[in-house]
Length: 384
Length: 95
Image 1 (cartoon, protein in one colour):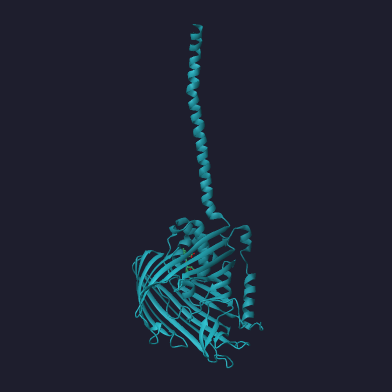
Image 2 (image 1 turned 90 degrees about the vertical axis):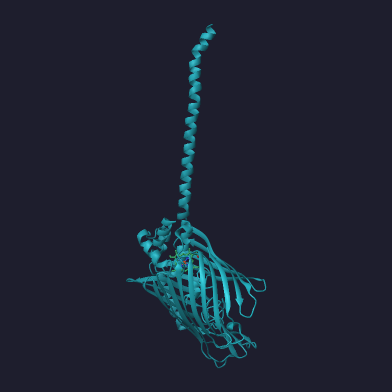
C-alpha cells in the first residue's frame, strides 16, 4: 500500500522530469544549431569579403577561336584553331604580371606555342606605370588593342597588319604608360625603349622586316618611340605614333659575311583614329616603317612598308547583329606581298564575348599570288 | 655593345625622373590608396569600357576577378589609377 502511495507521490515528479527533459534538450539543440548557423554565416561573410580583400589576386583570362576559309582557287578548309590563355597575377596596387600564350595548330598538325607577351607592370603612381618584358607594340592600335579574335570585328587582320607586314608586332624592352587628364580632355601615352626589329635579306634585297620581339640586339642600338592618344570627347580618340633607332640585316640568303651587316637607320610613323556614334563604330589607322640605304650591306637599298585601313561597324540590333566593312592597303618593297583589300562581314553576337563572324574578302595582289585570292571566311570566337 | 645613342640616354633620364614622382609605394605599405567612387565610376565605365571592345557585363565576373581585369585595362587603356579604382567600385557593386 505504502509502496503504491510512494509511487503516487513520486509520479508527478517523474512526469515533470520526463516532460521537462525533452524540452530542455530541444532548447539546447536549438541554441546549438543556431550557434552553428551563425558561425556558418560569419564564415560565409568572411569568405565572400576575402575575395575582395586579398593582397594577391590570380586570374585566368584569354580567348579561343576556330575558323574556316574558302579561297577562290583552293578547297575550303578549317584553317584556324587557336587557344590564347592570359595569366594575371596582381599584388596590391603595386605590381601586375600579365602574360598571354598563343597556342595554335599549324597546317602540318604541329602545335605552335608563342609567348605573345609577358610584362611586369610596376605602378609608379596614378599616372605612370613602368612596363617591362616582351610587349605588344605600343605603336598604333591594332596589335595592342584590336587583334584578339573576340575584339576584331572581322575574322582576318587588315592587309599589312599581320606577320611581316607594315605594323610592328611586338618588342622586348621597357615602357612607361599611363593617362593624364588635361582639363576636360583625356590623354594616354606609351613610351618605350626596346631591342627593335631585324631585317631579312634575300638575293641582295631586303625581304622582310621582322618584329616578333627579340632578346638579342644585333645592331647594338635601341629603338625608342611611343604613342600619344588624345580624347577630346570620350567617344573620339586620335593617336600619333613614332619610333626611331637602328636595325641591321641578321638573316640572309646567300649568308652574311662573318663580320655581319652594317647598321642602318630605322623610323616608324603612324596615326590612328577611333570614333563611336550610337551603334556605329568607326576606326582607321596608318603606319609606315622605313629603313635607310646602307652601301656596304648585302642588301644596300632603302626599304619602306606602308599600310592603312578604315573600318566601319554598325550594330543593327544592339549586341546581336552587326555589319562590318573594311578597306585596307599594304605596300612593301615587293610586289608579291602588296595587297589591296575590301572585306565585308556579318557578325552574330550570342553574347558580348561570344561572336560568330561570316565575311568575304576581295583581294587585289600580284596575279597568281595568294595575296590576289578572294576568300570567304567563317570564325567563332570566345573571349573569357 | 657600341656607345649608347642619344635617344636611349634621353629615355633613361625620363625613366629615372619618373621614378622620383610621388609614388604609391607608401600606399602599398599601408594598403590605403584613395578610395574609389561609385558615381564617378559609372561615368568612367560608360566613357571607357566600350572604346575598344563590346561592353562586358558587370555580372560576368566576381569581385576579385574584376580587380585584376580593371588593373589589366588600366595599363592597356592608359586610365589613371583613380579612374581604375572608381570603375572597380562600380563593377564590384553591380555584379
